[in-house]
Length: 89
Image (cartoon, rainbow, N blue to C red; front, top):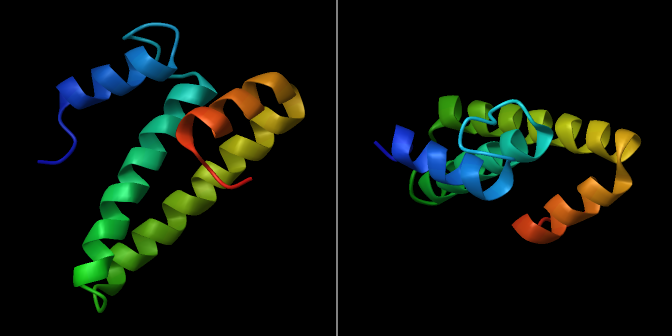
């Protein structure tokens, strides 16, 4: 499986406050970004997989909502996470 518990702990440790910080916006955005990257690679070789395409679009929308919330609440944290993940915003 591409996303096991060890990888999640690594993402939460790197972008959240601690390994158990699963609720902060930064950690959730980082986890969604990792999933989006995996699904994007899958879609490159399986372009007719419409169920995965729908999941990918939903994840992108979810990440966009998290980013807009973070931008409204704390612009410094927003800029830091966009820079850390290399997102185009």
